[in-house]
Length: 147
Image (cartoon, rainbow, N blue to C red; front, side, top):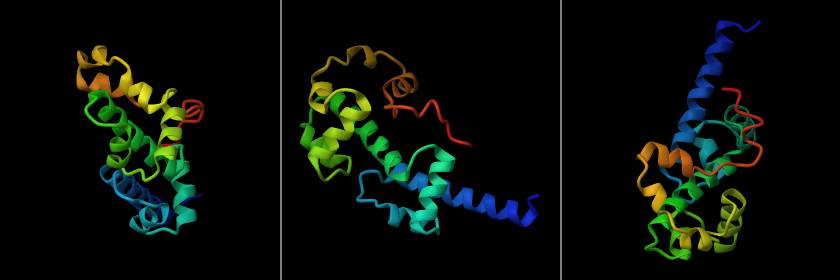
């Protein structure tokens, strides 16, 4: 049975995990590493990775890449930047890795996504457009986060 001290420690750890996740949401375009984000959560990288996966259903790196791809999709829908410029703008340093991750998550290469007609999304309210265009990792729905 968990003691009040155990519950307090668990809650404090969850607060630090959320702080780290918020950092990734805010600074996705920065050169973040698991080690640097784990420091924000005051955890070792291995413990942070295990706890993050348990709470959010994916690894910290996968979460960060999803945020980057999500932002890249928005920039590519505008159509005024090249794929390379978008890659750099979202914090990726390798066009090849960015393209592979984008294709795996979105189902088409970034250049095809950029060339695609996106007018139907422009008439939707922003909250619906965001949910509709959010990239989804395969299998994530099968194993939702524990919290």
